[in-house]
Length: 68
Image (cartoon, rainbow, N blue to C red; front, side):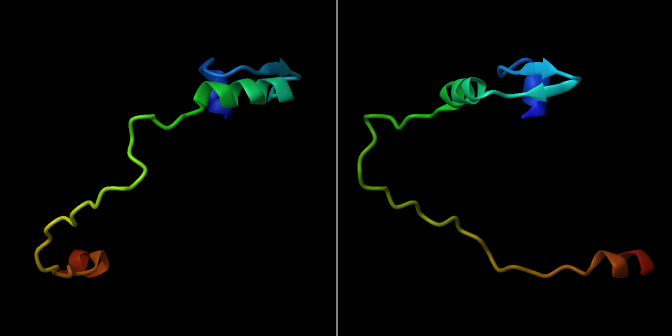
């Protein structure tokens, strides 16, 4: 949260060399970043097909690669 305040993306108070957040600041931050669901989305989730992945092959650990 300090990084967001430093970049001036969220409200804050600078007191005694520190970022301070009041209850009002937190409420505004929540409103700023709130994400609401779209009304057009259907209530039932769609089935997503699993990606086609071939056979997996283990690789040698890095510590043995350096020695070889």
